[in-house]
Amino acid sequence: MKMKKRWYVGSLAAIMAAAMLSGCGGGEQASTGEGEKLTCWMPLTSNAAMLVSNYGETALAQELIKRTGVDIEFVHPPQGQESEKFSIIVASANLPDIIEYNWLNYPGGPAKAIKEGVIIDIASQQNLAPNVFKYLNEHPEIKKLATTDANELFAFPFVRGDESLCFSGGTIIRGDWLEELGLSMPETIDEWENVLTQFKEKKGAQVPYSSTSTGNFAYAFNTTTDYYVEDGKVKHGVLDPGFKDYLVTMNRWYQKGLIDPSFATLDQKTIEANIINGQSGATTGSIGSGIGKWMAAAPSDTYSLEGAPFLSSEKGQKPKFGTYQLPVTASLTAFDAISTSCKNVEAAMKFLDYGYSEEGYMLYNFGIEGESYEMIDGYPTYTEIITNNPEGQSMTVALANYTRSYATGPFVQDKRYMEQYAALPQQKRAWETWSNTDAAAHFPPHLYMQEDELTEYAQLNSDVGTYLTEMISKFIIGAEPLDNFDTMIQELKNRGIERVLEMKQAAYDRYLTK
Image 1: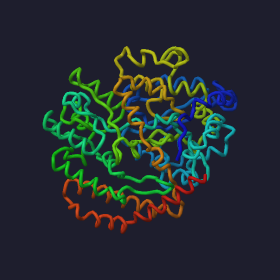
Image 2: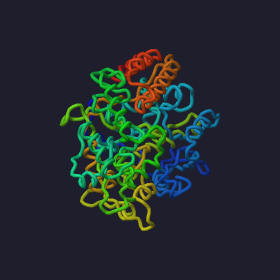
Image 3: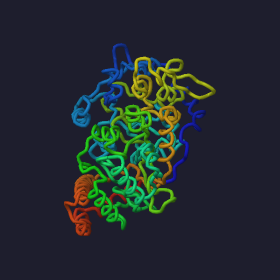
Image 4: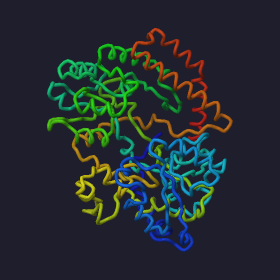
């Protein structure tokens, strides 16, 4: 799957024409009537929750309502109960007008949600959303990711507008320790073993590598712990020749005390405490909530974190795998759908479509000009209210008041947000390092099963995934002898992994022909 390097900026001029159709203010037909508000059910991000109790209190939401002329009441489920509350509302006879959620998680997928009369097919009323369809039609690879097999647009999607934005996480290592010990950045599995051993013996790291996953090290054996695509075929790493070698290596590291013995049950607070306090020297994380957050909490000025390159089967070879997110992302707040109970579909369309206009694009990414950003030499530059907030807010929290570029939503993300968000040299280097991978070519797109396959697929895929996760942990900690690896493979086949691959392959073939 070949990706374009830049998906959005080249289309701004074309989108401006479409933007004029929807306008900044409210038209007579699209405006909500006096006293009539549309309701938007959406999870409130943790960063926004540090500022407000309701999204409608943010400067961004107020500006959106002002510009579109569409009055919105926002309703939020309690944090941590999003999935439970989502199930309750979709079973309701009186749905909210707009529902922001990961509709890929709807039982049977978004096509089923349309068929069951929960949400509408936005593609059936393209004239009411000129901006998003202008963008999707000019970016067919994005349109394929955002639509069902029947080309239904089930929601207004969040889109990463540049391929570099798909790479924001990976393996993180103590750069200051490497320098102090005279070690180079590890690029092979043997170099990693030596580095972690040195961290343990010479830096006193009790758990040199502390993370819930060791999957990044599987890449050194030309495999992965999940499904992937190669030469048009859907595969699973566990069936690759190198997977057993990966498990043998992780078992050896476990026995040597190089990986956290509690990796299967670690929580994020423990992982963060370990890397900040020197109990570990390497982990996995992201540019912002990892490197940026942890360096801000560093116990000394010399503390430094670096993004480590993804591994490949041969040193110097471009990594085949890596941490990657699709440009049309699946997350709690990635898709804004319009329910079949919507009181005013035209107004809801207008409100959501605004994010794909030129003005909406700038608002969602940078906020309000003159307040949260200024145009300097043609570059939207965040002001100190974002970068050095007078109330002591972190950059992410400050962004949550004016933008959604730090998270997701109904708009196209601009990489100039990340260029400023990743302000530290270590963050910029990590972003560049983690982008050096062919992961995009091997990462499966959103795949949809046929209706008569839904129950079978859900049962088999869950059974296979649960069993495999359990066995990987057992092999690593030694609870299951590695001599039983072939027995595990046979059990996976008995549980239906080959049938799952068959269904995924058929879905992938349908995707390619959309």
